[in-house]
Amino acid sequence: MIFRKRDEGKKERLLLDHNSIRVMVAGCLVIAMALLIMSITSVMIMNKATVDKLKRYDLRMQAENIGIVIESKIDKAVDASLLMAHDPLLEHWLVDGDVHNFESDYITLHMQYLANEIGYDTVFLANAKTLHYWNYHEKKFSLLDTLSPTEPMDQWFFSFLQRQNNYEINIDYNKNLKDTFVWINAAVTQDGQMLGATGVGMNLGKVINELIAANAENNEQSDIWLVDGAGRICLSKNPVYLEGSVQQYLPAETAADIEAAAVDNPFFVREYKDEESKLYDIAYKRIKDSDWKLVIRMPRTESVKFLTDIKWHMALSCLAILVCMILTFYFVSHQIANPYKRALQLNKELENAVAARTSELQEKNIEIQDSLEYAQLIQQAIMPSSDELTQYLKESFVIFEPKESVGGDFYWMRGYEDGVLLAVGDCTGHGVPGALMTTAVSAMFNHIAEDVCHDDPARVLNELAREFHQAFTSDSERFIADGFETVVLFVRKNQQILFAGAGMSLYQYDGSQVLEIKGNKMAVDCRTTKSDRIFDGQIIASHPGDMFYIVTDGYREQPGGERALPYGKRRLLALLDKVANLPINEQRQQIVNDLHEYASQEKQRDDVTVVGFRMQA
Image (cartoon, rainbow, N blue to C red; front, side):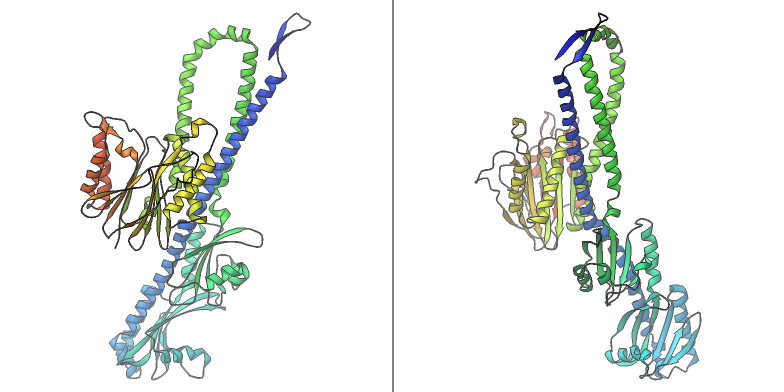
């Protein structure tokens, strides 16, 4: 309430009563709480999406790339050793007691090429007949030693002759040199008889240190370990860990997993906390043909450190908005409390209104566009990339064309050893409201796939409906109809597909025609959940070459043509039948072109998403 008080100078002044002050304070608190909730929710979603991407893609790819470099170096060394072992001149020289100069000169040139041109640290040759050990080192081929069965240092040669393997790989850590070497022993045979052994030696530590140096440029706190069969750390970016063991620096369970790593399995990714409760992510793999392991370790703070800057920017933005709102409340209250002064200023304000309004609109448009672009980046980060899609579904494509910068359509995917869980959906509305809904639904999918179920689409969909109802039920009539339509598939590696749908259909081209596989008619929404509202699952048989499509209703409902009618289901089925046998990239381009040609000058009516994939043999 506003009232007037006359002071001693007979002048009137306006005062605000306590209720007005309470309203202003309450409004500021509500705005502050809303900003806080929005900021915390956004940071949690971004943090979860970043960690999920780190585990599923970034750390795994970094470890695989390093593993490929190391194993390719070893493979090339094996090839070089076997090629030299099958040289007829070398066999003849060993049979004759390594006395002929012609073969000796030839072998010297061969070893010189491997050492100087290919870059191996040493090349050796041992004769089973004379027990002579020849070595090419420091640009010289010479007789280095005569091997003896009683000499412990020479037991590797006699053990190798007894095992009669084509080749062996030995990785040793030299304490004196504080470096790691890999030795390739290749058998020289003639008519099934072992004539001797030859091979190359390579400084594996030099290779690893180059990778460590390259890795250090991007991840200062990450580390690369090379661990021997006993769990001893023989190479590390941080000298503190050298000659320590994984049992000393890692939890017992994680160290045991590393020791049991199989050579024919992909990289394993784990997380653990050290004694100071610092969280780490690690990836590890056994190097083939050896009992050594490669371990990549990265602090979680290193992988998500960019979120700290985002948190500070969000905090400063919220603080600035709150200050602006407080000042706005104060200004508005004083303007309301002084109607006489407001009336005197009205003419002047009206004169400046046009120019000020134009400037404000320009600034607001820039702010809105910046916000939409940032929201677009967030939505793109949550959805899988085309590379991730083709990683699990080799012949696949996705068309994602929101009506605005962001939209209410979404697609989600998670790969497992027994198959791929895929979902495509259409949330109520488009633009920013729709995009916010897709963010929440994607987070629910992540939770359900990790903690509840990943290979039963019907169960996934029913759990999703329950969580959605629990999260978004409101007394407000405005939100009762909000929800989404979706298709959930689990594509097994045995050509079998499990399907469940909520208000959307799956289209299958079986080689002769396009079939529509309908899900339940009801969508996932905020209505009261009844016992009979259960989403059903279906098992779909398929064959190699079958095409599957999931299309949101934005495609069918796009107006166009001469009479601006919707595209329609009949035209869509005919289009899918027409393009199903084309290569994946041509299918995608033709589906996009056909919609744009049909729409012509008509504006896009809704978000459009199409996901297609071909079953593999």
